[in-house]
Amino acid sequence: MNKLQLQTKIFLGTASGVLIARSVTYSDTWILLPIGIAVWWAGTHKRQLSDYLFFSFSLSIAFWFARINWVTLVGIDAYIALAFLMSIIYGSFGYLMYKVRNLPLPFISYGLIFISMEALTDYFPFGGFPWGKLAYDSADAPWANLMPYGSSPLVTAAVLIIAALMIPSLGFVLQKAFAASIVFVIAIAAFSLFLQDLDKRDIKSAGKIELALIQG
Image (cartoon, rainbow, N blue to C red; front, side):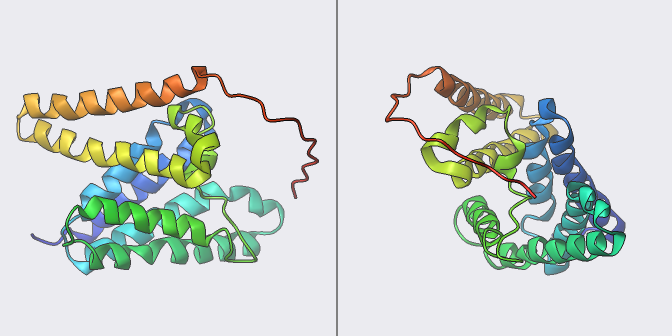
């Protein structure tokens, strides 16, 4: 497969990062999360190492500079340094994606890498900086209902599953195989409805606890 043009990699990667970051700003734009991931994975899949790296770093830089703009209240230098540090952590996983691209069911491997990346930020840097987790941007999304059952990794997995289903759906549309595309659209809709229905189920109370939360 031919390499992507440099400007194409940077544009698509940046667009993906902006889509994911925008879902943080507006609570009703959670659908942008799987779309951003789908663009990322579809744009790099089965390509050259440079495609994975440029795309992933462009996404990471766009996402983190938008995601933690509140750090400017501390200082512009701290904001730039932290955004670049987190971009290096997230962007470097493009290399791992490249290494597993030829494994069976590579999107599962991509998903495991992404979840591992989020788990890493629970401990590094600064003893933990998990601000970029997809679960924290999904309060109003159907997959947020998975939080009681498997915490943030399960919520992230649901987002990644929907993203992975979007890729062949769009691919079949581009090939004018609309019947095949509809199968994936139905799968996405059925999965989303299942997740939406979770909040209607009764959850038995096991007691009461009192919490004191401090942010900052």
